[in-house]
Image (cartoon, rainbow, N blue to C red; front, side, top):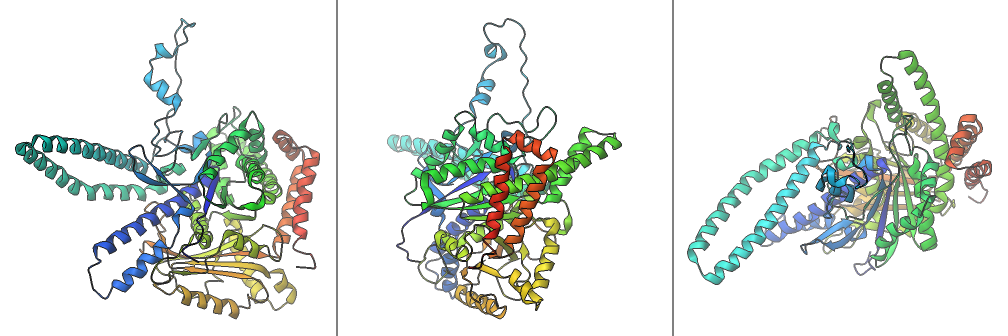
Length: 638
């Protein structure tokens, strides 16, 4: 890739609570990588006069992390004090209840609190009361959500930095006055005071970091919202809160859980115009818009909202930009446990009633899942160039929070999108196989003109190495954790079958391999090893395969969930992600169409679709659309 290539940008769109959990981990990765690249550059500048034998290794180490082009996802801006700052080019849609204890206008935004809170807090009860009302007035205010200890420590750190900046500005003014008066006694007094303050800062700096690290270790239990562990600095325009939606209805039913609810919300009032404006402001800042990354919790109302937003994007940009949609989905058994606990809390002590409600709730959840799944396939996929479902994993079937399960999806997203986020660096070669988004999409759709893709991934601490057959050990992310084990076993069994029909059923139509964390200066060698393993497994016969290997590992931020079973303590994570287009998509799509048709024909499904605003003809169109997509994988010209 030429260093003089045209600058290009990507806008990221995030829809829903779970997608924002994934996004929080994703932006934490980027924030950590920016800090690591900067610290390495500064350290190497300080050691520039060192003629040690490690000089070559330092240059390679610097290049491997600087090869990630952050301008692709970030915008450059300035604070009110004129300081330059990088913020993600992202729009995040969510409910107010999902933001936890942070401000409504966004986390770490230098814009003050939201209007209602600031108004209520600054006025007394008598001032708030209407002048036409002479009776007593009572204010009912929902208590603020509890913040995680990590978030509180982070905010305290921000406040300390603000105080330091104000102190430096005050000291600069005093210095100017002292120079004008040429008062040596005052200068001596001031220097002594500054020295004492600096000594205190050095003494307290280590303890502050230690407290922040200890708070991060508690996120496994403390992180109830995605803002509890997000450490990236967002622009005030990033967080868009959906108005008029409450977490539960008066009957205790969870709201905004259906695909159609989001589509209906977007069509009301003048909200579509507002949705256009949310994105237009980011697009106008781009010199050359390359495309959109979309993280969506599509098994909810945010799937319908995503559909309407993507319609606006396509109307504005046509096919000139690429759209990659990553469907971020919770493990199904985790969702079942959450519903079980809600029923138990609401009906404590009535076991018979609980059992009946659990059965009813389970049926409704399964029906809603089938309908959401079908609507997502039929409504979102036609608007995107790549439709990639990613399920959060739950090791050993144990219960894990959204904070934990979403981290693995974020790891996959960071790796999959690496090839079009690389830039050339001086000195040693730090990557091979960089490509554009359009090249990736063209390869994956070259033999089947369909956007449906599958992703599998393997991770390890430290540098990447082919010590085992990593390709067969990859964990699939395109199915729920409850069935991932059996799916993996089926694929291994199919790969060993000699029956030609089974081999054809599992045949890949296109593949893309991305490896992060190649050893120093060995990106090309690792790429050659990957080529050998692909050929030995007879996986390259007649199909297009993309290979990208980068030396930049994923630096693990302190907010990344820890695994007690991992013995390595390396702060760097190497990843091998494989994205495939396969003939097995035909079977998957046919099954989804049948599930949607079955769920939409019973009385409960009809009532649910009707409440979302879908009539009989639109329901039939969904089934027909999915089955038409399935036929793309069985045509004779494939």
